[in-house]
Amino acid sequence: MLSLSDSESSSRSSSPPHLIFAHDDDDDDEDTNSSNSNRNNDHDDNNNGNNKQASINNSNQDDYDIVDAIPLANRDPVIPPFSSRVSSSSSSSSSSSSFSPPPGLSTYHADLATSPITGAIAHDNPMAGYHHHDLLTHARLRVPLLHGLKIHSDHSQSSQQRSVNVDAVHDTLSPTHVSPAQLYSTESGRLFHAGKICIVLVGLPARGKTHLAVSLTRYLRWLGVKTHAFHLSDYRRTHIQEGQPVPDDYFLVNASPTTVILRQRVMAACKNEMFKFFDQGRGQVAIYDAVNPTSAGRRVLVKELNQHGIHVIFIESICDKPEIIEANVRSVKISSPDYVGWSEQDAIRDYLKRINDKIPHYEPVDEQEFSYVKLYNAGERILLNNSRLGYLPNRIVFYLMNLHIKSGSVYFARAGRSTEVRPRYKSDPQLSDDGWAYARILTDTLLAHRKSEHELRVSQGDDGSAERKLVVWTSTRKRTIETASLFEKEFGFDCRQRPQLSQMHPGLLDGLGPDQVKAQLPDECAADRKDPYRHRYPRAESYHDLAVRLEPIILEMERISSDILIVAHVSVLRVLYGYLMACAPSDIPNLNFDRDEIVEIIPSAYNNKVKRIKLQGVESDKLL
Image (cartoon, rainbow, N blue to C red; front, side):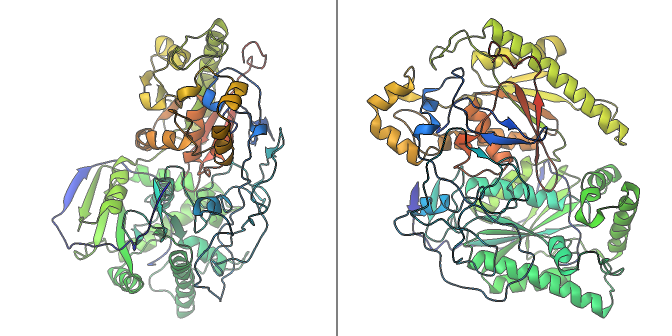
């Protein structure tokens, strides 16, 4: 990875005319005031039904990639450590000392020691007062990985291990974090000469702000931009003791003096965390998720942020369609921590009251000196003001133009077996008889699952009369096309071939077995053991190359609101799963997708969830 020394200063221009585009948007909102290694074909062991643990499996020779040929037991992977979530208590002390990696480590390896997935030994933290990080010493960085080791799935685990089945988009990044699609690094930790940026979200409740914050965080982190979303409601819940009700006038503009003081404390705690993120965490983009309803409050916020050298971009989400607002309320707010133990109707009634309380005092963003983006009705159009912002802000605007309310699931499935036991990349073999039998089971199982999910949504009050649309994507390889062909031939679904979904190119390793690779390329094998994500065999692709290649697919996934089935090689599925679940680079080569299951990613405003659908009749080795 290229490392540059830079000051990351940015230059801005003043206000050009408004620009208006047609565009797509997203989902939920916030509520407060202004404010291969095992690159083999693996699978996950079942744990409590649909919740599976990532396991390491060295069997299965089909889908054979020589790039995936080196057994995991012969590699020397890094055990990535734990990254804690938002601290519930505020720290009074803060250290301004800069982060330095453990002795003998490059910036990249220091990042592997602070990856946001599994745990490690705690050491003194250079980010005192911010979210805690556990660092590995140089001596503990590498440990032998035994065949069959599992990364346990436990939402409550906080130290030694962390599940790849839990969306890590809210995890705190280490100061030296390196992301899956990051192209280079800098001494400052900031990219694209963009400096420090705070994206301030504006809009009434249930306008999709929280979904917008999480989606932007996921995408920018994937590119390597150190980003964190600060949801003001999280800090409100921290400052109000558990079991205590929110003051009745908390969401009113004309609140009592006691409530005003409480709100000021909440906002101060949130902003202090943001400043620590920038100053101690080497952060680049903070997303401030709150209602921010008044012009006066926004001006005060801009002044304070500018004093810290932070450029401000406002994104206002505007929605006047009742069906969109109701969908946002139902899909997000009834699952909010604010409404634990509430009935659905009571929760909806209370939240709608919050909205109505704010409407008379809400002031749309029209300060011409500000840089701002307005999103209308979840993507009908987008308006920019003072839009000469630089490369990174324009990448953000480009992403917003592709963003939509994502209600549909993304399904991952592997292709069926081919006519070759060890298919060569150049030969591009067709499906075998067993592969066609697998394709039949895959088609029938997914359609039955979608039907049952639709019936469940209808029973829960969904007004939709028809199932969501389904789009099927495959690579241009024959096996993937044939595996998905029944969806189009028998049921008329739209099947599209996407060349970006082709598996990693094996290069000179095509046709070689694991023993041959180790004998002929011992130095390459040693390099691959040290960095299985970024290592590139001669004339081959790495996982990092694949992640960069898949960016158009990622943007189109965000743009399509219907269900998507992706039938592809396991290497492609690993990278796309890594994006949707915010996995660390060190985890992606070890993600496992068995042929006897479909992996479903279910989107929501706060985080994505994983569900695994068993393919009955694909248990036997004959069909696997």
